[in-house]
Amino acid sequence: MPNALQPSTGRRRNPATRAAILATTFEVVAELGYARLTIEKVAARAGVGKQTIYRWWPNKGALVLDAVLERSLGPGEPADLPDTGDLEADLTAVLVATVEEFADPAFDRALRGLTAAIIEDPALSQDYRERLDEPMRELKRRRLRRAQMIGDLDPDVDLDLAVDLIFAPVTRRWTERSGDLTPDGVRAIVRHALRGLSGPA
Image 1 (cartoon, helix red, strand yellow):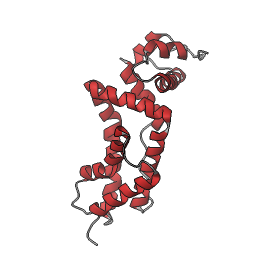
Image 2 (cartoon, rainbow, N blue to C red):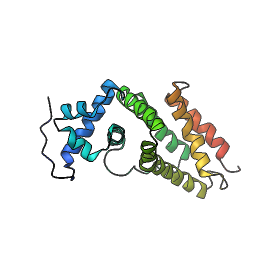
Image 3 (cartoon, helix red, strand yellow):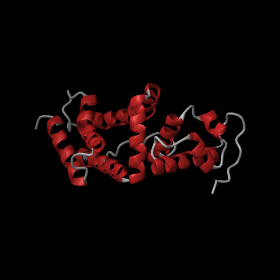
């Protein structure tokens, strides 16, 4: 049944309408896949006119990106990585949460479709980098920088390389549907990565 939504005025987004459109978009892409999702299907299910969606999002790639970000992060900026003083435990907690999200069939299908679209669409790829990838990389660098300051990581380690060594194996295993994506597998990735990145004993 279409959602009863308040109308929007001009180009200003009504928060309730925006939230309903993004929630509906996530439902549709999780149910049908990215290729079969259309603006018309989202509009019909959300109970809005398709021009409302086109007024706020230029294409379905931008719409799905916002829907995935809303589902994954919620409103606002990404939160800092945990800092309990135990770097290995903190990074493991982040990556275990990541693989749990990957294991959600709805999120998995939505993210795989979006990933394929990002590869094909340079504008969408840039939007993804600016809005999610680079902000998240900076949070990861910030956590690792604090670890360097207290001697948990080699002070000469390139932090961008360190981020790749710690986080990229999980993404690769998910993308290729290969390798161990259990909590024990994640712990092993973090343990071995930090062994190579830690400072002199």
